[in-house]
Length: 124
Image 1 (cartoon, one colour):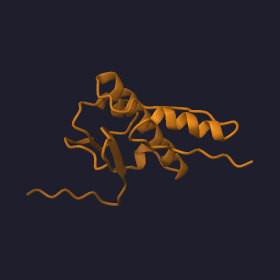
Image 2 (cartoon, helix red, strand yellow):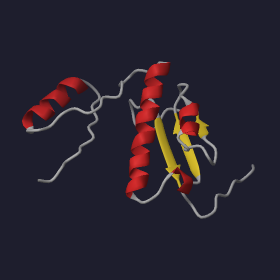
Image 3 (cartoon, rainbow, N blue to C red):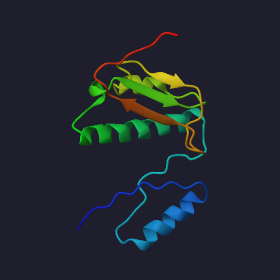
């Protein structure tokens, strides 16, 4: 039997929607809900741990790791645990914090990374 691992996004009534979703699929369960709408220090730490872990899984699926990235960016208007990025190796080329809201409405925290042959920095 094929395994399905969906990632669901809800703007409202997330818990009710997730419970309904798992009720219609046998052997399904809710693995993680990451504190939607919360921006306190504990919530931001939990979000960072989750997002860093998901990026690590995606990098591993490509046979890569943080060592292979050339830049990591964080988009948030809320303080976030930069030490978690350092501890996990996600900031070995530095960590750029863009003090702005992520482009997805309702999202309080977004991370991306890239890997290019040559990073060029332009001074204006």
